[in-house]
Amino acid sequence: MTEDLKINFLIVDDQQSIRKLCVTIGASLGFLCEEAESAESALAYIEANSPDIILVDLRMAEMSGLEFLARVKNMLPRTEVALMTGYGSIESAVQAMKLGAYDYITKPFRVEELKLTLQRMAEKVRLVAENEFLRERFQTETALHGIVGSHAKIQDVLRMIARLKDTHTPVLITGESGTGKELVARAVHFRGPYSKRPFVAVDCGALVPTLIESELFGHDKGAFTGAVKAKEGLFQAANGGTIFLDEIGELPLDLQAKLLRVLQEKEVRPVGSNKAVRVEVRVIAATNRDLEKSYREGSFRKDLYFRLNVVAVHLPSLRERRSDIPMLAQHFLDRYAPDSPVRIRPEAMNAMLDYDWPGNVRELENCVERAIALGCEQIGLEDLPPAIAQMPRASFAVEQLPTDQPMAVPSVASAGSSSDLEEIERATIQRVFDEVDGDKALAGRLLGISRATLYRKIKRYRIQAKPKAAAAAAGRSQPRSSWQ
Image (cartoon, rainbow, N blue to C red):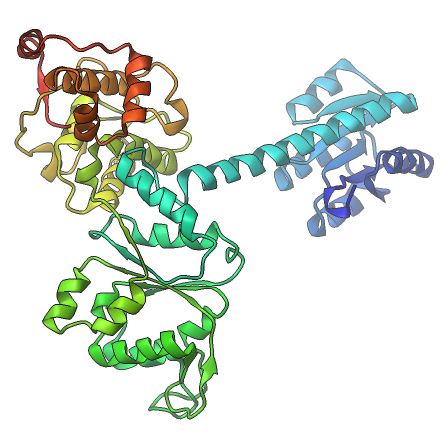
C-alpha cells in the first residue's frame, strides 16, 4: 500500500497505554497513526490535517467525546469517528449515533473487536472516496465538460473530439453563437495528454484594439505609455498547452498577419522587444462567421484560414437537434437545482420543442436557470420567457405530449427506465415510421439517427408499420405537436 492510499488514523485518549495499544493495532492494518492526549490537542491537529478515521474516548478532562464528535463532524463531515468508554450506557450510545458516530466501543475491548471496527471504518472511507472519484470520472466522460446529446450530429462531434484529443493539430470550430464551441475546445484539451498543461481562452472580439498585440504576445518594460514592467502574453502563458482563440474572425488584418507568423515560426515577439520567444502551443480557433466567405471578401487572410482549418469541427444548432432538448433541459435542472425535484410540465416542454432557439444551448440554459431562479417547482408555460411561451404553434406530424400530468424530464442515466421521454420517443418513431410506410432508411434520415440505432429502437418499443390510411386516421384523432 502506497502512502497516498493509506488511511490516516487519529487516537484521542488521556490514557497513554490505550493510545499505544490502538497505535499498534492501527499500524498492523497499514494505517498512518497519530495520537493526542486531549480533545483540545486533537482539534489543533485537525486544523492542519485531515484524518480519515478517529477513535476518541467518551470521558476526558476538558471536553467530552460527544462534544469533540460534534466539532469534528462540523469541521470534517466525511471523517469517520468511533467512541470508546468504560462507562457504557444506551443513552450515550444513542446520542453518539445521532451526532454521526460510526460506532460505540465499550472498554475493556478485545483486540480483534477493535481491529474489525477499524477495518470497517476504513472500508467505508475508501468506498466514499472511490464513489466520488467514479462520479467525477463518469460526469467527465459522459458529459464531456457539458456536451450533452444523443442526436447523430452531436455524436459525430463527440467522435471527432475523441480522435483529436491526442494530437497537436490546429482545430477550427465553427457554429452559431451559443452552440458550445468553447466546451468542445476544453473537451479536446482536457481529455488528452495535455490535460495537466495550460488552457488559455481568449475572446478575440472582447480585446481592446490598441492592446490586442500586447495581450497576445506580451510587451517589454517601457514599450508604451503605462508599460511600467515587462509582461508575458497569452501565448507565453499557454506555452506547452492549448490556446483557444474564440471569435477569430474579429481579429484585425494586421494582427492576423502576426498571428500567422507565430503559427509558422512557433515564436512570439513581445511589443517593444527585438528578441523572439519560443512557444510550443496548440491552437484551437472558433468562429460563428463563414471564414471562407470572409477571405473571399478580403476581410480575413486566406493563408491564415488554411493554417487554422487543418481539422474543422462544426457544431449543429439546437434547432437541428431538437430531440436533445429534453436531455439538455434535465442536464441544466441537475446543475442549477441538484437537490430539488423540479419538473417541466408537458405544455412547457412542447413549447420548448417548438421554439427555434436562436441563442442555441446557451439560451436554453438561461431559460432553465431563469425558471429555477423564480422558484418554480413545476415549470409551466407561464414560467418560460415570453418569446417561447407566446410563440404561435406550428403543426407537424408528430404526436403532442399529454398536458394533464406534469412531466419529469429524464436524464441520460434514466434512459433505460419507463418515462415520459421514452413515450415521446416511441410515439415519434411510430409516427415517422408510419408516414414513410416502414422505409427504415428514410425514417432514420428523418429522425436524424443511424439505421442501426433505429433498428434497436424499433425492437425495443416493438414498433410495426401501420397502413398509411390508418396512420392518418389515428393522427386526426390525436392532438399534434411541432417537433420532428
